[in-house]
Image (tube, rainbow, N blue to C red; front, side, top):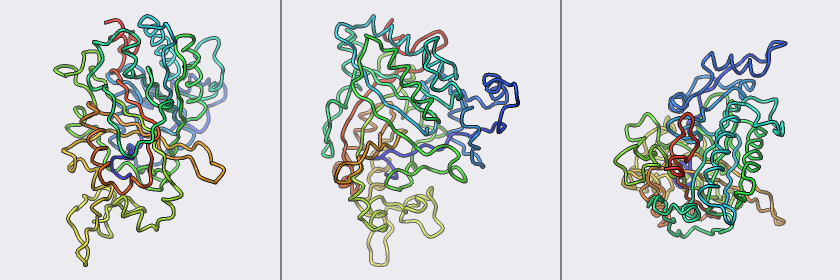
Length: 431
């Protein structure tokens, strides 16, 4: 999972500091206002810049609640921000009889709620108060539309070609009840209660207009949990995120986001992206029976530090992988079926995607088998050029395939960010 199929962690967010406690008599809102005034509040540009540059010191735990992502912007939140400690993915189907009018009203409600919650404010007078003691905690809320949404709302002519169903893959064991959906929401935060509060508020907002189709919960390491910022590990213990595209790269925007003009996509998708969502179960009992060396050969990278197997003792995670290097016996140091080799962009015609996953654990079966793995979320301007190209290559011989199973799947069109005074999807629903 060092490179593509099992998605990799993004570089950690820039990390903020606050006083350990607010002085007596200072309100939570005043404290958050002070944080914003001193540059602790992250807008869209700040989030992207912070993603590209890692700080030198770990995050004090007292600062976790102060982070704030902006609801309005060029792109929706929850794409460029770094990994978040807690996540919820939820899909809805429109209720029988609900159409374009009801969908527009729902997206208007959802956008208003998301904007307030991301600012650390209560939803309304009926707020549950679950997160009343917390700051925004870098909450992000992202909305997308599934293939079926356009049929339900009579917007067939506005459905992007890129939203055509994904092909079948050999590792698929898909549960249709936990796949697809008319509408999709991604919620992320650095605090579990803040994330849950958003989940409940948005579910309640759906009212009679939509019903939950499926919902999944995920997690990542909390910012500040390590002595210094580093690429995260997945549940297999692998450093996971080494080759994720970076905003500083010259072709980042064209790989991840639909251009504002001249695209084959409809105009309402300008500055948007396509999210592929896969629940990937890790067969941890089988994986953990392998020796450390065998695990490294499956991935193609050292488990301790993420360095490629072709690197010397002083190699690091970012050392360039030498695909032709051999050992004294003439064997390739990076095996021919290693995951990191097969998933490299230069082995897939440059195909790449921005991966922003959550790990999950949904319990233990009576035989002791863990239902655990990855909630894979990846972003790309064209899923056929991104996810499908890479997954087809992995399907033909990735050594990791023996240890994973794709159990649910979804593809969603995620429009660009809402401008001030707009709701997400307004250009589609009122265009």
